[in-house]
Length: 366
Image 1: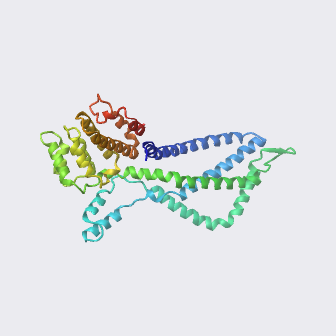
Image 2: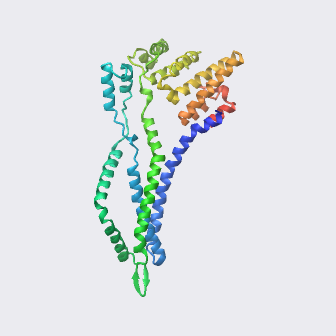
Image 3: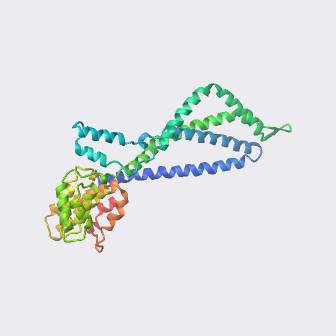
């Protein structure tokens, strides 16, 4: 796949989320303005007033239909009650059934301190159940409700004058039709919009709350402890001292070790070695992991360039840098600015200085 295609894939989801979030604001503001305009028109006489009244009836139907459409399509992704599954995993692991003890520990440690509020889904379930039940019992009175609306419009919406007498014109006849059209269109729009576009937004919130960096590290633990101990030796690095003696190391702790190695002379080699041990862990789903790997390979590329290493080695390091940069941006586009900052040769952190004039790099981060 080309770099341009990769860049397009990495930013399309973010742009799509932003577009639809903005569209919600535009629809809300537009509906408010249109409502005010129709209210103003309804204060006049004749067809101008009839247009205002008809527009208000349609907007009322669309509002109710939109609310029902949203209510019926709230995604269940909002409800993730992990307590029961985690207890089951732990119990099964203790009895030697199902998940391994390490997997059980990892699952329990993944339990969130923050989680999605499930009140919206609960209210949705209650209201939809109630509305369906009440609606089925009252369906026989639907004709009386429509007739009542027509009578109300005939008595209150007398915007015409016929033979010297106030008259509602055709509003009593078309009013119920406008209401039904608004209900149907509002329901269909918000139902489909929520299912197709809002659900990914909710899922994105779940991904943000699900901090995989807190998961315990289950591989290469001695290597990371040894690296942390060497970093803490002869320094005041309390974080590394704690990691070297901690009973459990998280993914985030392992990334801290790699980051600290990048500030040691030729520490990039050890950083790359430890980073490669994380390729089978959830660390690869984190933009920070790929950001650190791009910095480590960037340091390696610069060292190979200065030592006039064979071109094959330099090309291999160059490809590793661009791949890591691509994955960083794909997972979190906000890292672009940080990646660009690493290209400044005069900065303290200049790990990507060799790529300041590389077109492939700039096509990824721009």
